Structure formats: structure tokens, C-alpha cells
Amino acid sequence: MVTAVDMTPLDTAAIRAQFPILEREVHGNPLVYLDNAATTQKPQAVIDSLTSYYSTMNANIHRGLHTLAEEATAAYEGVRQQVAELIGAASHREVVFTRNTTESLNLLAYTLGARLQPGDEIVLSAAEHHSNLVPWQLVAQRTGAVLRFIELNDDQQIDVDTARAAITPNARIVSVVHISNVLGSITPIAEISQMAREVGASMIVDAAQSAPHIAVDVDDLGVDFMAFSSHKMLGPTGVGVLWGRRELLADLDPFLGGGEMISVVTREESSWAALPHKFEAGTPNIADVIAFGAAIQFLNAVGMDAVAAHDADLTAYAVERMSRLEGLDIYGPADPSERSAVVAFNYRDIHSHDIATILDRSGIAVRAGHHCAQPLMRTLGVPATARASFYLYNERSEVDALIDGLLEAGERFGFDRGA
Ligand code: C6P
Image 1 (cartoon, rainbow, N blue to C red):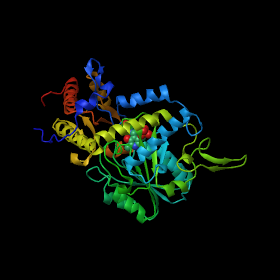
Image 2 (cartoon, rainbow, N blue to C red; image 1 turned 180 degrees about the vertical axis):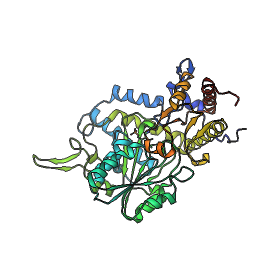
Image 3 (tube, protein in one colour; image 1 turned 135 degrees about the horizontal axis):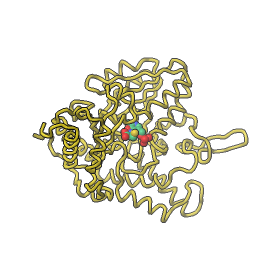
Image 4 (cartoon, rainbow, N blue to C red; image 1 turned 180 degrees about the horizontal axis):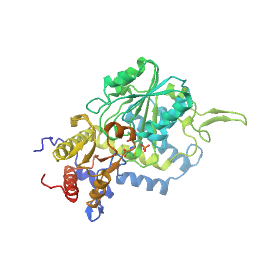
């Protein structure tokens, strides 16, 4: 019996009606989109925003004095303010637009990393996505800094004790994932930030999977820098956010040089524009940033707490149903209330690529592979997993379709459906 209580306050039918892609069929079946940790679908409002921008406003920003340029600049800068409010930033000047989470983290690795000395420690975790690992490996190779890792506890979570064991007085940077894209586990960021502060290290959080799913407030988390992507929260691809405390961002050297990020340029040298423009060299992704604003408006209208409650309900339901399938292993915390909207799993000894391919024949989209977290796969002792991930438009009936699809996959590999 399913015990997860349906306390979802969301009218998913009304929400789904705003996502045109959810009407399509795949291989003759209704699309069941359970790959939201990779990227989310876009509501009509976001699609309309893109069309409207190019139809009515297109111009380069910050440069022109004509009406279109002024309108485009105001729309673009308005989204910066929306982002600042979404994450509780003290000022819109603390919000830098990048291409994605990966670029935001590389910006930090390049600028903060340049200050490291041999023997300084960069503390990451065993659950990092490659985008919060590879940039720091490059920094370590360049500077002689040392990587240290917060290990998972027995419940496959990063906890306060495993963090304390990894953060020594030599730590200069602590950069940790908030919600793992494989385990769904939620890292105790506020406690880890406190540890980083005690040893004088900069604290960075990779919020790629948390900003879309739970309310994140940079002050509550106590972090110095945060990175996330628009495309995982209903917005377009090609837009990322780097948030940083104003005085810390002001103290960093630029990442890329060129137009927009300068104040005065002579043949010999340049001085930098004020924040955040110092970090936005060249023409930015204007249309997509503006459409990201429509995505934030959509999420605000639903309410991040309602999104989080819906995700939690669906995840608990999925974990409950999946854990009753014989031969199915779920990774991540045992208690579903301790995970976000991600369920990575292996079923029988069927390769996750086969699972994903068979599910796709029924119109069900899941991801399979190492999820850009190869060291974590090694820690878990598996080459790959399948992964279902949910968002505000998903429904319990889609979890039921997943279960049916898995049983069918089992049958194809010779397992008894009733087993
Ligand atoms: N994870 C997934 O399917 P970008 O690609 O730069 O927007 O986001 C990178 C990233 C960083 N951190 C975490 C925790 C992430 O999950 C991701 C993206 C996708 O799991 C694509 S690999």
C-alpha cells in the first residue's frame, strides 16, 4: 500500500496546460518527462517572451541611447533584480549572468583559484558534478593546491561529521553541491558554511539542483558564492547565475576581458566597470536572460514552497513504489524526506542504457549513465545508473507509468512481471 500522503497543493492539470511540449507523443505514447534534473521544459510564457523580445525589442544593451536599446536594457536589468529577490541577495549588483552553472564555477576557480599557494586546500565532496570538480583540478595543477573530499556517510549523504573531517585549517576554498544530481541528498550547507568561516575559507555552493526545487536564501545558507542555471528552472538554456557577496566579488580580478566589462581603456591598460558588469564581457545572452525572468515569474506565482512540497510528495511516492520492485536498487538517503526530486536506480542487472531505451519506447524520458559524476559512481561501486527526476508538472500517474515501464523492461529480460 502506498502511504505517502497526497498533500500536493498544486493544480498540476492547470500547470501542465501551460507547457505545450507535454501534449506531444513519443513513439505513439503520451510523453512522460522524468529528466528534469538534466533540463526542465518551458512554459508558454517563457516561449512567448523569446518571441516577443525578438519581435518587438531586439537591440544590444547598455550601449545604445535609442528606445529599443533602453527597453532591452531595462528588461535585462530587471531580471537581475528578480534573481536577487529570488535568492535573498542584498543587491542586484551581486548577480552576475553567465552561460550556465559550469561557467559560474569556472569563473570562481579561475579568479579565486589564482590566489592559492602550494599546500592550500580546496575542499569538495564525493558527490560533485564534474563542473564542480574539473575546474578545481585545473587550479590544483596550476597552483600546487591540494584537493580534499568530504566523504558520504553510511546513508550516502554529506553530513556535518564527514564535512568536519575534511575541513582543516589549511582549507582556503570549500565548494560543495547543495542537492546531488544523483543521490538527491540535501547537503547541510549552513553548517558547512560555518565550518568554512571558522577556518577563513571561501564558501561556494553549487545550487544547480537546489535553486529550481527549494527556496534558497544566500543569507540563511551563509555562503559567499552560489551558482545555478536557468534551464533547470523553466528558463532557457545559455543563462547561468553567479551570485557573490558584493565585497568579495569586488575584490576578484575579471574572468574574461573585452567590451562591457571596462571603465577606461588605454593602449597599455584598462580599469574595470562596476559590479556586476566587470564579469560580463561582450554582448550577453539578452533574449534568454529576459525569458529567464518569465520563468522566475512563473515559479514565484506557483510559490517555491509549493514546488518543494509537490516535489517531496512525488519523490516519496516514487521511492515507495520503486522500492517494492524486486531487484531494484535506489541510491541516496533511505528516508525519502531527506532527498529532493531525484531518484537514481539500477534494476535487476539490466544496463541503465537498456532501461532508458526501453522506457523511451513507452514515451518515458529518464536519464542513464554516469550523470557527469564519475567519481561518485566509483564511490557507489556502479558504472552507471538510471535516473528519474521530477518537477512541478509531473503527476503520480507518471510515476505509475514508470513502474509499468520498468516491469515491462524486466519482462523483456526474462523476469516474471509479478515477481
Ligand atoms: N546536471 C544532469 O543531468 P550546467 O550544465 O552548467 O547547466 O549544470 C552543471 C551542473 C552542475 N551541478 C549539478 C549538481 C548539476 O546537476 C549540473 C547539471 C545535469 O544531472 C546535466 S549533466
